[in-house]
Image (cartoon, rainbow, N blue to C red; front, side):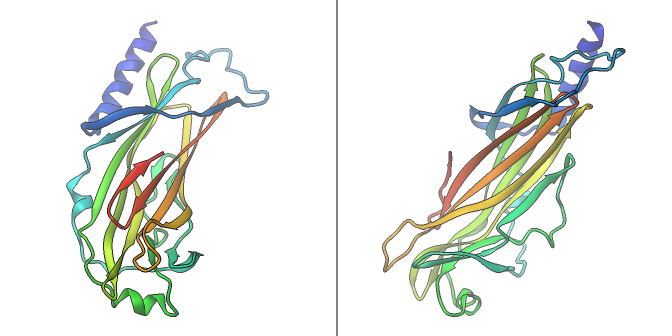
Length: 247
């Protein structure tokens, strides 16, 4: 028993070191957990099945680091056309990894932010004629996996970043620079974790003559232990008016 007490304390210190202050309610995420076929614990293992079994997955809004709120003035990468509807066009990268093998993906060349812009013959030219963009908005969430001992064995923060309110020819409210970035990733021994984001759909939340861009993003989590695989996902919707709605 003293082994588990020591391990619990070590994990508590590990995950508390980088924790941000909670500013929202805790949401429990549904998940699917399956036993790995043929997997067994080694006969001399110091841990039993409860350690390797997830009991709860939660997500909580936390304070956003100031660095995400700074406009660095970087040139925007519009990327390829990935989705269109009557009045809107989405450009960027449809699916991108945010955590690979328990580490945040930091390769900025792979992270082409999403933009939801007016549908025109030349979206790139239209983009450079747009005006009225907001300062960057960022919202940060912490995801935690607790095992059956109540120990947090996987945790990470992800930040949703975007600019909104861009107008084209004096109309509309569009989105640019939409990205999801991971930080403070912690994965306990015996576990693995990956996560990626993808654009699900875009929608016009306004009138045909004065569009308000909307984009729904899904985050898929793939976790596992030596005994089990754990899958879960969540989604959020952002608009050209600056709102972020979690599903």
